[in-house]
Amino acid sequence: MEFTKEKLNLEEGLKREWLITNGIGGYSSSTIIGANTRKYHGLLVAPLTPPARRFVILSKLDESIEIRGKKYDLFTNVCKSYISQGYKYQEEFRKNYVPIFTYKVAGVEIVKIICMEYGKNTVGVYYKIKNGNTKSKLTLAPIMNFRDFHTMSTNHNFDINQTVMRNNKVKVIIDGNAQTPVYMKASDGKYIEHQNDNFKEMFYIEEEKRGFYPEENHAVPRSL
Image 1 (spheres, rainbow, N blue to C red):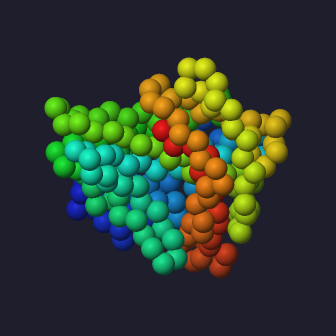
Image 2 (cartoon, rainbow, N blue to C red):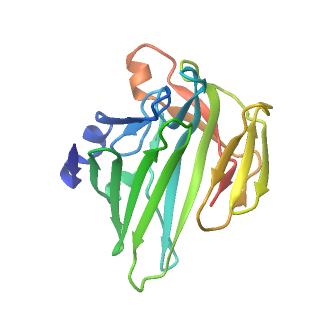
């Protein structure tokens, strides 16, 4: 499956979806422009008692890149009154075994590859940046949740407890679920803690079409 820039407009991009799995009931899924259109979408949807009790843990990663002091948002999110436009920087989407996104902005190329570890509730996101001699800085914001994938966190305020561990690793406990902590690890960079930071009212177009309430909140515990 391959889509080039002319097919990566908003209308086409919101219609086309991808999916990869981890072999124990978990999966990663979204659209080819990275905007979630279903409550079932998420970068990490994990079975807490495999293969049952699938929970949306990591909804998505929102990326921004700063080039020569100017910030560009690469992500696309849909809200009822606003749609961010990171898809305009996207050059390509490919999926043979894993999804690969390519962006170009101000002479800098950013490639993102998403994969899952077989047999584990683990998702990996790899970034490769070709910036030559151009100074640039990539920022990642994890958009998180902790709910059954059939439900939604509508009008929900999250209780987030987070602990920075060694080797760029963070332990996150969401809504007091200490028995199922979430771990994030980065190969490089520095974590910036967010307090009481919610992504409010993400809008799921496909849920509205099915007659369900289409909006929910997410938590943003940290950025990198």
